[in-house]
Image (cartoon, rainbow over all chains, first blue to last red; front, side):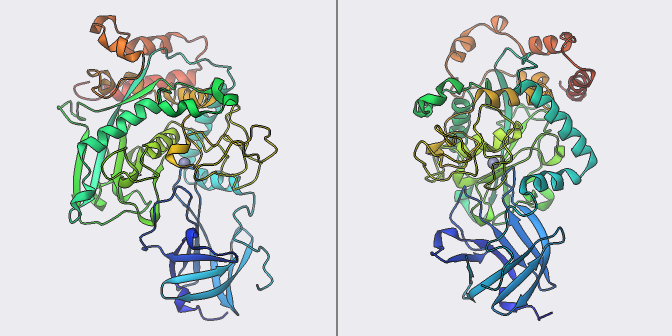
Amino acid sequence: MTEPDIGIVGEWLHSYEEDTGDAEVYRPARHPFRPSRRPRRGLEFRADGTFVELRPGPADRPRPVTGRWHARESGVRVVFPEGGRVDLTVLSCQDGVLTIAK
Amino acid sequence: MTEPTNARFPARDLCGTMLVHRRLLNESMTYRARRAAIETRALRYEQGRRAPVRTEVLTIPVVVHVVHDRAVPADDIADEQIHSQIEALNRDFRAANPDVAKVPDVWKALVADARVEFRLATRGPDGEPATGIVRVATDRHDFTVDDGVKSGATGGSDPWPSDEYLNLWVCRLRGGLLGYAQFPGGPPQTDGVVILNTAFGTTGTAAHPFDGGRTATHEIGHWLDLYHVWGDDDGACTSDDKVADTPNQADANYGLPAFPRVTCGNGPNGDMFVNYMDYTDDAGMFMFTRGQAARMNACLEGVRASFLVSPAAKEAPAKEAPAKEERLTRAMPETWRPSHDGDVERLLQDSERLTTEVLNDIRAAIGMVGGHPDG
Ligand SMILES: [Zn+2]
């Protein structure tokens, strides 16, 4: 397993207003996001390899789904214990902005 | 991209919706059993196998907890802003909102008056005079969705008894979130609704496009057991909101969509994005349906039956904008006005239609309330 990429460690929320044609933009959870009725998807990469995704919840409280993450070439692989595996291509991660390929 | 199994984050992996509910249900067997009973009952009402016994407009006592950073005085919103929210609720839940006229013709016959009103509590939990507004200055700048705002121990404000009052917490929420709710049947100490301070009411700090008071209307819809009209299946057409007269629709709608918006083969009329339980802007949502009103009735005559007998609900009439014909009712002498006791009596005597389980619900609710001092 590759050492976690420290740059990506933390809690990110989808700043969908900033998305481009082929990239999704995430900012730290503490960022002063504009109020939005559309839920902001959350991605949390913990240093111990725990991954928490925040998905839309039925009473508007985001619903955490936990898995494991590890860095791979050009991105991150996430594996969920319930099954399912996702590869994220990290386009950039600097100055408090995480950009992921759509 | 690196040979992804899913190109995007799989919102729908492993049959989305059922996972939502299963995870929630697994949290507690008690909660699971309660939700099942609530759902069974809701379906009976919704399918017309049971008619509501309630004949009167129910007024729900509300306590608003304004939890604000002591360093940010503007977050301590004014009474006027709070009153503007109560007024908005009393329009929306009585179908007395002027924008109900914008409902597309094809759905006009479905518009429902839920016959629920709200009033700031005039008595506190111990029977003491109250304004229904609790102001708490805190050292916390904002809150997350961990229910921290619902307890003084975590920098928030403790609820008033949630079987007698609807607790509304108003605060700054992280992540741009407008609010969140708890379905009936959950833990009483966190029961109620949380609203972002700039999405609360229609004046003061309320900010466009969430300055129509509709965040609270939507969240209280959940508190009265309504689901999102799209069924929380993240774009699939497999699950709906368990209400027959709202069309099955794929996903949430945002902003101000144009009619019709067809998904899930629900043409020609398409998604009911004008419903309070979709995700459009405040100016884009203006109706509950009859089916949703039936679900709310099932909730109010079941798991939330305590509100039908709550002493707090039997206080003097509200000062806030009475809706429509209620003005007449309120002008009548006290003795002419139907009391909630009438509804309770009917509920208890209507044993032919009531199951033992439901009777027990109501008796338990009365017991709870009766156990209160100054009841
Ligand atoms: Zn909702």
